Length: 158
Image (cartoon, rainbow, N blue to C red; front, side, top):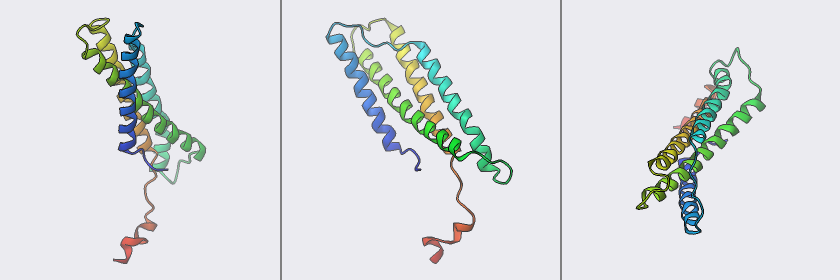
């Protein structure tokens, strides 16, 4: 499995930004209440980031100490998929938070006052923490290249 590429993360962030902005703009144009993410969302995203990294620790220990610790390959696969999903979700939600922030800051009067801007900023920070936690966990589950195969391949012929 390949690592999550920066272009994929940027694409998800752009989709989230456009979606967050137009969601709030559409709701305001329809006379509905705009989306204001609660502070609890930021806390939950931080906790999820910590859980993802903690789930990757046994895999990291097994990768570093190949002789002694064995890890279930299905567990390792699930952790890598969880880490990738966390990174993509963090990117999407972070973009959504940025879109909400752009909408709120671009208005002459901010609904909910400064508190709504702080809530959107907290959500964005929590989403970035989830993104970073997912990327860190994904890298923790990477198996280093075998020493035996270093002399075989295209570079060995030179």
